[in-house]
Every structure is written in structure tokens, then in C-alpha cells.
Length: 254
Image (cartoon, rainbow, N blue to C red):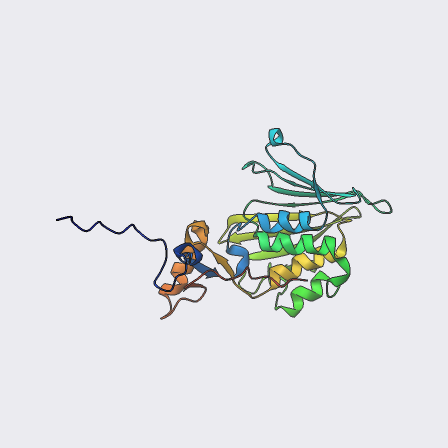
């Protein structure tokens, strides 16, 4: 008598669909304030620029990514060097002054994407004054003492991010610093002639109240500690909320 053979393992479910068509959800959390979420997906920025005609001008031997705009007046460099700013954008317009913008490693990619979107679609940025954008989102002048509130500084509502317009011998530049109780998280610098639509779009992305999705392992330790302290002081977590499946990046596409 022959014994029945064991049927081969199937890669399909009872309804005939492949198991690979339904991958397991990726665990994640939503982080707010968003500027504390960590770097995120760098390809959001590079993919957007490539889709809008920016071409690769680096080689694998360069150990970095260099993209150049179609008119060759702007270049983005992404270099994963812990000793330097990861992101550098350089501009040499035909009818204006040279400019540059730098963003450190933990700057959320969604915010750099907003900056890049404004470079490719400057006419679609609502407004042209970053201070108005920040004011409308509840940012205020930081109080140094009772008699001094810096006119050109704005602080986020929770106090962990400062926007600073610096003036030094007719040189104007925007500086942004994210800190948690004095511990630096990241900073960004935008020089004098940085296109105002890009500056405003970056400010709007900073001020956006929408949380950012992150894998728990990618959230900076300082942020996790902060959220743990906040959660312990309340009956429910205030800022980091577990969610069942990974949503689309929290951006407003222009």
C-alpha cells in the first residue's frame, strides 16, 4: 500500500491571492513635534528632484550623491559624513547672487523635500514671508529676559526649535536650531540669497502640526526619552502614538 504523499507547500491563501501581495504592516509611530522625528527617508528628496529633471553628476567613487538642476544653476549634495552637514544645496543663478543651504543629518527629510519642491515649483508656494508663516502657526519671540525679546527670532510653541534671521554687516541669513533641553538635535543654515519661496516653504514645513511617521528604531533616543517623560505625566501619550500600518509621508504635496 502506498502512503499518501505530503502536498507541496503553497504560497497562496484560500482566496487564491499570493501571500506576497499582502506584506506584514510595518510598525511605526507618529512623532510630534515633527522636527524631533529624525532623518526619515532621504529618497523622498532625491526622487523628487530626479523626477523633475535633476541629473546625477556624481560617480560611485565619490561616495556621495550630487544632483544638478536642468539649467545647471543649482546643485544638491548628499554626503553621509557625521562630521559635516549631510545636505548642501548650492545656487548660482544667472541673474542673482550665489546662495547655499545646509541641513544636518537629523533634519527630517520631509522638511528638506518642502524646500526642494519650492525650488522646482516656486510659484506654488503660498505666501512669501517666513515670519508670517511662523506667526500664524503660533511661534513667538523667545524671551531672553524681561526687557529683551529678539526681534528677528521665533520660537516654536513647545520651545525646542528656534528660527533666527541673523544680520551682520549687511549679510542676512536664516539659521534654525533644534534642541531638547540644551542637547542639539540638528541645525540648518540658509544664506542671504536663498530663494525666498524655498525659505518660506521650509518654514511652513517646520510649523506644520501634522506628525511624521517613523519606525520606532529610527526615532532619536532624545526624542523617545522626552516623549516617555511626557507620557508618564499624563494618562495617555501626548506625542508618539502607535499605529497599525505605515501611512503615506505626512506632507502636503504642492
